[in-house]
Amino acid sequence: MTVLSLMTDFGLKDGNVGVMKGVIWGIAPGAQISDLSHLITPQNVAEAALILFRAAPYFPAGTVHLVVVDPGVGTPRRAMAAQIGGQFYVGPDNGTITLWLQKTPAARFVALDKPEYWLKEVSHVFHGRDIFAPAAAHLAAGTPLEALGTPFSDPVLLNLPQPQPTANGLRGEVIHIDHFGNLTSNIRAEDLGARLQTPKKLRARLNGVEITGLVNTFGEHPTGELVALMGSTGNLLACVVNGSAAARLKANVGDLFEVFFE
Image 1 (cartoon, rainbow, N blue to C red):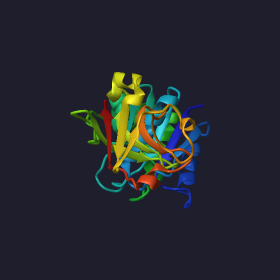
Image 2 (cartoon, rainbow, N blue to C red):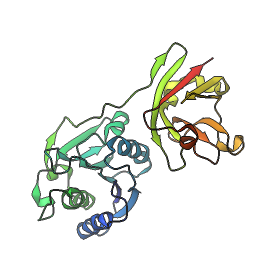
Image 3 (spheres, helix red, strand yellow):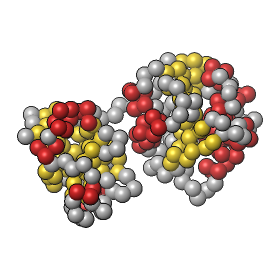
Image 4 (cartoon, helix red, strand yellow):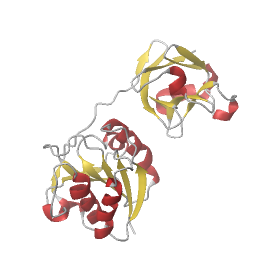
């Protein structure tokens, strides 16, 4: 039984996620569906790319990742499927796979231009139901990637911000705010390198507030204290113990996030 992960910006109120599952099970009744997220900020492709990048390594080979965060639905934007490493992606060709491709460059791409793998009636505004869910289900049921459409080699990639070196550190930015209000920066462990061996000598600063030293976990400091630490996916975070750093610092995605070295 193939695993199929499902990520959208649909929310859960309107039944759209359930309808997509119904389409999938109608074609691949044995598929195991994992709901990765349906609370992606509406039309936020960069956020979808980050969540997919974080999640994909933890799924087994052969998993089909169906992602429908599709502000270009109904326009000439390309519908696609891809094999990336040992897993698959189905969704719009709008950059959602950017971060995943950076870590797993071995990939093959096809445009979903074979209507026999869609539903018979295709709406202008719900390709998640009518094109992407059927294509993902056919993959999960064993249809070869190449059967779904025409190969291509130029997927859309996002121009995502990268941390920049300064005279005494790095200049990054907030790229994600999670459910708890933790602030994820684009500064990663590999950017800090050997500096992580002396975490107490690092200082983080954002929105005029400076945090001295990195901790390993939230419980090292009392409730309400602002801390910096490396998150489980290797990004530098700013957090409030048992609270919200986003609320405390009035922070937003895109805000400056700096690190200073002693």
